[in-house]
Amino acid sequence: MVTLTRPDSFAPEDLALSRRAMLLAAGYAAFDIGANAQPISTPADGLVTGWETLPGGLPAFVARPAGKGRHKTVIVVNEVFGVHEWIKDVARRFARAGYVAIAPEFFFRGDPDKTLGTLKEFPAILAIVNKAGNEQVMGDVKTTLDWAAAQSFVDAKKFAITGFCWGGAVTWMAAARFPQLKAGGAWYGRIKGAPGAENRKWPLEIAGELKAPVLGLYGALDKGIPVADVAEMQAALKGTKSDIILYPNADHGFLADYRPSYNAEAGTDAWAKLLAHFKANGV
Image (cartoon, rainbow, N blue to C red; front, side, top):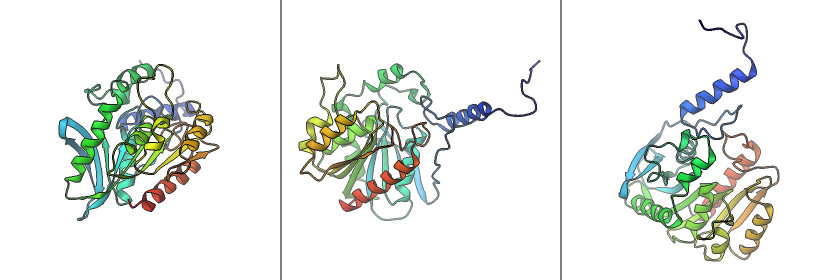
């Protein structure tokens, strides 16, 4: 027999558990779902969306306007949780703004069974993420750019890149590597390496090599990226077309509306500024 402990009403924690279960079922990353999260759901009507397999077996989620013609394109670089539902929604947001949005699954080699979105222990997540070294990731960015340039719906003269958390650092690095990119948007990506990560370059080291202007979008409450690091990067960018906006009341992941750190005010403002930055640089 099943015993119902609260037969006459729901407690708030019941609703939180139900919401988490629904978001998990919808494909959001399990690690950091907010108990009260009500993530934005961008409709796909008028869009063409779905998975593509790029050269080398690289999977990528693509969202684009359904109409004919060539469109500006943005590469969307995921958080450490891979291409889960929130990244797909971000791609749809860009598509509704007139972009071809391509979100490559950079961790597919180390996570062939697509477990990242279900993992709840951060060390297990990092064990997969750390298999994707900088040169491998840059190779995947090049594969994405080359594939996109060959598509009939892409304007190959209008490429941008944006990324979140892990993808924010990737954005800085790609902007220093690929002249095809006209603009970048780095959302709270690590600027300097942590102890033990000295074997690779980080954004602060390539600030003077950027081939495309990058707009950094950071939160002053981010415990993993000290304000001092942001200030150091801002100083390194002085005299260039790149810049960083630091939101005083925002934490890490402030655009991610499925996470407890979501900040609607900062996220809305930063999204508008990113689109304006892309437009100002011809994308």
